[in-house]
Length: 399
Image (cartoon, rainbow, N blue to C red; front, side):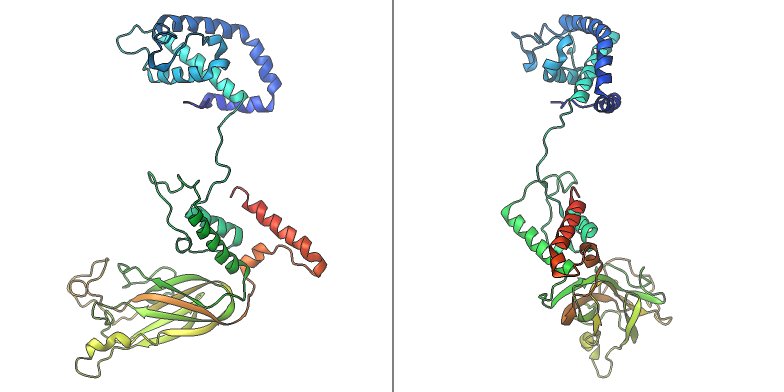
């Protein structure tokens, strides 16, 4: 059933009705006589072409227009809503039945639209929505970013949302006890990361490069003069030492792909070089081609990093001698050892572990966003706490 929707022509009437209701009342009174004449004319059309089927006795389609006068649409709005739907579609009167001329037909439709839209403008009733609506994963991640200046991998914290017709927020009103536990666990982890807690224990995050990513040329965001590699944005929870390890892509025999000569791997943090590593194939003994699995074990650093968001990058220095040796260029797709082997080594994964020997929670964009007030004395703590909570609540409202 149509919920007394406001047509495009009635949008202006809604604003006028809310802003100056006394003007609407006056205008309605002034137009009362013409409206009554139109209602009488259209009522004659209804009596002739509609009442023979839609009366209390026949009740065709479960609809009776008997007793629902056009000059009293207000008290029979639901009935005329149903009738208007059929009239708009041209479905009534049905095929084979007598029909009014086009002018009379359009006059009845216009009258009903005007009356129903006027009622909707005077008393809008959009219906009741859910009191609380759960955010889906994308909305949740965006809200955390806006409120706490923190980019988190929500996919690792919350289960995938059900999707219907391409939308994953259709059933976002339900919140089972199990899902509530996941949201609470996510909130606990995110709050510790945003506020900072010395109780955080060392953890590890592994980022794997997609196997079909070509690393034969320069990748956006990495230093010029390099090729391939990976770039990882990571939020470090505390000031302390972190260990970062890079592993190279391997074939099914666990040998480094494309390692035919020595290469130089660069590691950077926020664009600043950390260290250069030589990656040299093991060719010192017969059959040693199958012993290259250990040549990347030294590709790791352990350095002090301040708390907050940082970007780690790793890539190979471009070499002019690294030419494609095959007659045709490899496909820019997943590489195969026999059909389309890599011609140069590539980065497979980056792992970040820590914090080790943490020295403090540090100053981060999240803490600056949250702690809008810092108490100077113990007596100021309660007031500052109220200021912080109200600021978060105000920005979180309806987000």
